Image (cartoon, rainbow, N blue to C red; front, side):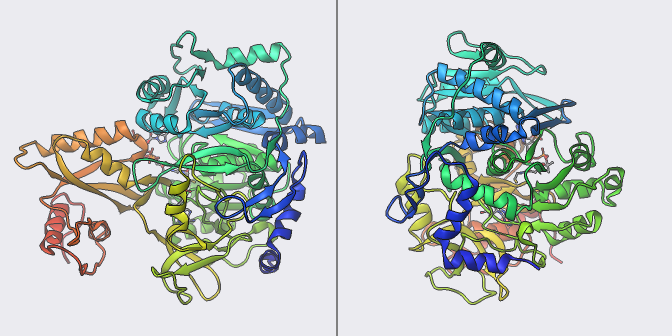
Amino acid sequence: MSRYSETYAAWQADPVGFWKQAAQNIDWFSPATQVFNPDAGAYGRWFDGAICNTCYNCVDRHVAAGRGDQPAVIHDSPITGHVARYTFAELQEQVSALAHVLRGLGVAKGDRVVIYMPMVPQAIFAMLACARLGAVHSVVFGGFAAQELATRIDDAAPKVVISASCGIEPGRVIAYKPLLDQAIDQSQHKPEHCVILQRDTLTCDLIAGRDLDYAQAVDAAIAAGAWTDCVPVAATDPLYILYTSGTTGQPKGVVRDNGGHMVALRWTMEHHYGIQPGEVFWAASDVGWVVGHSYICYGPLLHGATTILFEGKPVGTPDAGVFWKVIQDHGVSALFAAPTALRAIRKEDPSGALIGDYDLSSFRTLFLAGERSDPATVDWAQAKLSRPIIDHWWQTETGWPMSGNPVGLGAFPVKPGSPGKPMPGYDIRVLDDEGHPVPPGTLGNIVCKLPLPPSGFPTLWNAPERFVKSYLAEFPGYYATSDAGIIDEDGYVFIMARTDDIINVAGHRLSTGAMEEVIASHPDIAECAVVGKSDALKGQKPLGLFVTNDGSDRDLVELERELVTLVRSKIGAVAAFRTAIEVKRLPKTRSGKVLRGTVQKIADGADYKMPAAIDDPAILDEITAALRARHLIGEPA
Ligand code: COA
Ligand code: AMP
């Protein structure tokens, strides 16, 4: 029997009491004077007045409680052929030493530190070292190019950047240092220092006076017996800023606090993921995304569980059996992955033959999130793994599942295509565009009644007005998720689409607006539109349509290549932008708004209604013909 309903009801009856109780699993230097202060911040703040330290709760308290010899972080890197294990005691030594180095560079409570690193354990040490000092980290995903990094450096204004000489992707080594140097050249704000991890695969030159060698500095600190205490911070102080795609090229700096974040994540490890301290939890994501923040770094460590940092791909490093090998080798209890990863594995090993090569006796549950799980993939995984496959839905903004299926409370029956029911903390509603509730089973805007629970973002860094405008203004009293979906008569949530211009490519959240800004900057382009076209592997892929300047006689193959290169160099390879086709005109409303939704439907070969406000319906036929000419859609039946 699932205890979900009674737990959700207990939260509804007394939300403050619910989180007060959950907070008992966290060590506070001093407790909250007000568990929820409705008068603070834009919609209230959690654990007001409490003093704490997130690193202390992730590391030191476990060492003090006798877990010093338990593995805390396992780095499994099939791409380099290395496996390394760090116990909680070793983690404490590494983190304390790095914190000492950072303090020596002038980093103090409240200062920002940008972390631009591949999937190496030092990325986790860096996050925790910042937390130890009360400094605010901002991790930038390694697949972003220099300009994206520069934008984040300018917004976060870090005192120090922590980076590495290189990242390693299948078949190519990515030199990070030139990207970092280029970003610092481009940015207005200049960090005082960079701490660079030299990797054997490719080392880099350091700039005298600005750059430090990570290993040399940390080793020297350890040799000198340096020790850094955990700095007390307010529960409401920021722990990190994580930039996520918005509707323009300027990313949104989602702010996460210390206290509420700890309470919520610790609760989810036990109740949602059903993990006990000492067990091994693996989120096969990247530290640059929110999943990596919450469930590679903070969640498992707060809970005294072992976390896996996986530097590889679901296929090709070396094959589609690597996920099962990692589970076997490290005794993983639960895996959290993106559906794309499962689709990639299924494509290479449709019969699931490789699964049988490994001992999966430790493995209990597979969690999926980051994008919509297609029922075919879920059914395949269920049939091949014979374990619960749990879809759950959340966002960078919340930091933990808004809907799911709490394995720790006893899972309720899964409905294919649904990421479960609302989690305690989230009063989820579906509203029409005028803000009226819609009946069960009806598609609408998914919103969450304020306040957001602990860990919910209190604001956007440097952009409190944008925070209100983007999230709180449209439906007063509610947080607008920008997802459209349904809640059925049994209370199951279904997420169908984004209501803004965000697309989800291989579980990566990307802004089509940002891509359009880059394409429009090309001198031969008059105007453009980017939409997400359905893709069997990656969920969606960006598709660019462009109109050239009058009189342009550019070779279109060459022009497309330039646009693809431009997006790759400005945003990064992760945008997976490969296709840009010329059209004579873009379809618009009479007021000049590009009808991206209709273009997307045409590109997906889906039925569409002629938009009432369309300026010239013939343009849709032109677009259909252009897509057909490139074999992006089929001929009419
Ligand atoms: N650093 C640098 N480049 C990166 C990168 C990183 N951390 N991550 C991805 N890239 C690059 C890739 O090498 C690729 O480059 P290419 O165009 O030269 O081939 C490009 O960005 C696109 O990457 P991706 O969309 O991931 O495609 P892929 O073909 O490399 O891999 C999958 C396909 C399915 C294996 C991969 O997308 C995957 O593992 N997805 C799961 C994603 C995930 O876990 N998301 C977290 C959400 S929970
Ligand atoms: P991110 O902030 O990168 O985690 O992306 C959040 C967005 O990813 C959500 O707003 C959804 O559009 C999508 N998403 C995440 N998880 C799911 C899921 N389980 N099902 C459907 N969409 C999801």
